[in-house]
Amino acid sequence: MLFKALSAAVFGIDAYVVEVEVDVSAGNGIFLTVGLPDTAVKESKERIKSAIKNCGLDYPFQNITVNLAPADIRKEGSAFDLPMAIGILGTNGTFLRRDLSDYIFLGELSLDGGLRPIKGALSIAVAACQKGIQNLVLPLENAREAAVVSGITVYGMKNLVQVIDLINQTSHVEPIRVDPEALLNETLGYAVDFKDAKGQLSAKRALEVATAGGHNILLIGPPGSGKTMLAKRIPTILPPLTFEEAIETTKIHSVSGALAANSGLVRGRPFRSPHHTISDAGLIGGGAIPKPGEVSLAHHGVLFLDELPEFARNVLEVMRQPLEDGQVTIARAATSLTFPARFMLAAAMNPCPCGYFNDSTRDCTCSPAQIQRYVSKISGPLLDRIDIHIDVPAVKYADLAGKSPGEGSTEIRQRVLQARKVQQERFRGQNIYCNAQMSPRQIRLHCEIGDDSRRHLEHAMTKMGLSARAYDRILKVSRTLADLDHFPNIEARHISEAIQYRSLDRNYWA
Image (cartoon, rainbow, N blue to C red; front, side, top):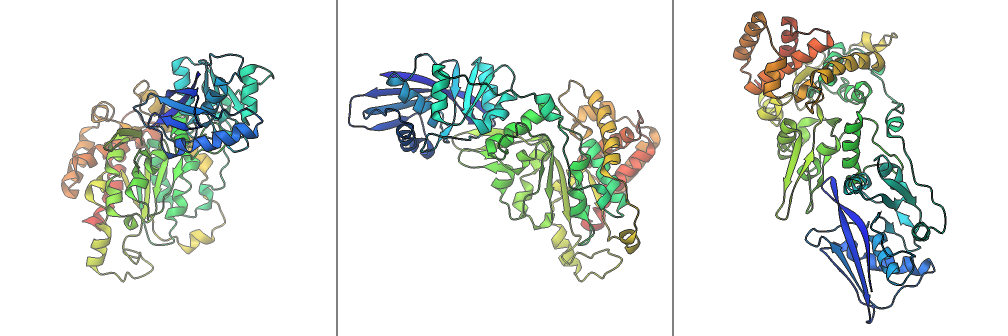
């Protein structure tokens, strides 16, 4: 006897519908799964058998063949346990209806019939809605995440018996409902604040400019100057996620298994801080079937690389494509996948191996060759892709001992929000959200400068030997500085400050 149920699988960060066909025939109890299943799918037969028996249901001791269609795409994960169990139970008349084409079933079964959470619930809910499938049945822990999608009814189940009752309508089951706007607008509490950082006014100003325009930033200074402390407070001044950004960010975290249970949406902008021992596959993504890496998990947020020269050079160089294109393409023999990776890069480093080159309070013990070898770990092309370079000197005692708190995150965030609001109006309908994402054509359109500014910029380009990419980035930062000052046009002082943010690296890399 043949019975069909619908499920879904994730490919990249998107999902597609899978038809689970179960055929039970006379035989000696062989269980065969076809349709390119991975090891987790093949092992599901033992979980399904125990779950059905421990729920007090009849398990057919006959030959069982399960086909996962389309059969030319590899299926992975344990989310097919539930639809396969539904198919087996459907062949022996457990259900009062044979047509379940308006349901998608997902879930890993425990041996007692309970449902364990899965990955990629939001992507699957989006795919189900696009296919016009009305109902989605999945573990309770994933229900809030899937219910964010409008136009589909989501049922969060605890075990297999509840799913059977839902199909047979023997008990009333309330669908899970979520107000995505209310969920997104819930106030986020931060345990840190820029008030905690003493002194460092120039570094705070640079971070404000960076967050206002979404620019990459490099903090250079001796140990203990507060580089990491400042960087960890970046999320407190970032603008809130839009609903579209939250959906895309949540999909990435969901398929990676990084989304907390019952969280629904990623409400705050991600802040990812991988250790410097990370591999290139861990940073950029990879695997036999590619999975998102740290650059994608930081999408619409911040990727913070502390002790930048300590990262392997090949790991840093793979960031060139995502920094330039806002996405990363991972090619394998069997497939090629593209993941979004539009993030703000914040990096911190010492100026030399001992950390005290150019420091006014302590002498540097490094030779010029050691310093050059240390900073050369950061290549010129990568440095060119970082818009703002700022010196973070050691904090003076007077600043540390001062009792008056500095400017807090709330005040800085208000200015950042005002600047971002201007940018949203400027780029409305163009699928970009901040100045750092401008293309060369948009730079020419929105970054007009006067003759004085042009001569000043020409002089700086010639004297400092800046590249064409650096020229574009100076104009982008100048546009952000003008937005922060509520100026419709870029002034000479904005160009000067933007050039200053590009001049620091010449002290170390020249």
